[in-house]
Length: 536
Ligand code: OGA
Ligand code: FE2
Image 1 (spheres, rainbow, N blue to C red):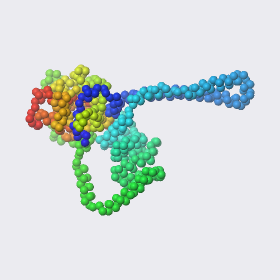
Image 2: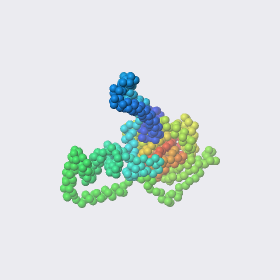
Image 3: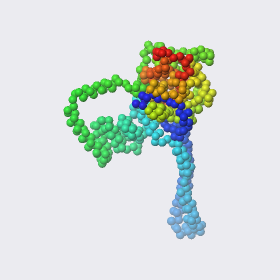
Image 4: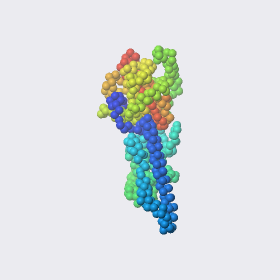
């Protein structure tokens, strides 16, 4: 499983500066806001075109009305009409020049401005990959947050400001994307939702026959033969000549007959085996399930006894002169591994500066593929990130110093400040920040040893979802703008602390900005001396 690998990031910004032309829109809100503005411009341009077209039609209409009256009178008494020399002259003029002018007007293309605008903008539009990416993000959210298909389709999500719903056609589209991924579970959910909305009378161009075709296949793939038959029957009522459905029907009947035969001779031991696997399924919680539960805030809660030992305090960075007079607020988030949160530790102005510096450089975050040794994008890490150096801005430098003062660790050997933006559905599945033993080359290029500790700033609130969770120990840390969390990834012995395995939950509603600093072993020899034991 991909998310079982250790994933770490190398300073991509240093290796491939600005080399991305098209940048996976769906992975970050930052880039999508540009699209909203582009769309707004296009609407203005489209309205200009409509106005021009309307005024053209208006002129044509007037001409038609005038001519209508005139020809009416003329046809009633042609000779009398033409007996007037002015009428004779005007008829010549109209036929020789005016109708020609009208023809030109009718042929005149008013769409030039709009079309050229559109052509330019379309170069920067999302492509199929973006659309599929956004759809898959929706399906991922549905799983992680246990969202009922109908709730999602009606847009009833917690914390939403702009309610939006899916049409039957949208649901059909989602089902088709799931289908092309061979994800029949979601195909069934979404095709069924499309059908339900049509049955409820929604006016749509979505076709029930098509939907039933996909739906029955997805249901069959999941082993529910009798439901597949029922759906195929429904399809055949709508379209009795449907070739595939007729073929499937015969096939389903054949299989059902065969199953009945086999069932007669089935033994009790099979039932027993089935029961056993069911029990196993119930007790066994794979990491993915724990991760998703924690994301929903359903994780293991700490016992009250343990919770009582978590405190909050004013912290002066171990008598650091910069913090003696103005200590900072510090809270214990978790005991083992120890995770502390600093409150009001980065100001709104600093956050804005960091975001503005990062925005033009955001590119799809990558992970290190241990097999090929190369950086690649991965479905388990969906966000955009950029790296900021202390040299380029006094704000970044000030932030680095703050981290050094409050952790007591040398930041000169740390990686640059990483800024990450998660759009809706953006996530980072469970991983370790440190390099493991079987990956001795993990941070070789940096020459500063392993990632001893992680400092993570929350630079935005998140309307729903987006927690940082630790599935090994059952901790969920919720984003809160202006705060930061800190933990050690390594024991003082230098051994990796496997309980620090953590993940960034998918954003359900809103947008998540974080920045992190990975501190390294070198330089900490006297600040955090090594010991032989893992227990300290
Ligand atoms: C990371 C990470 C957590 C978060 O980037 O390594 O674990 O909540 N981020 O963004
Ligand atoms: Fe991490």
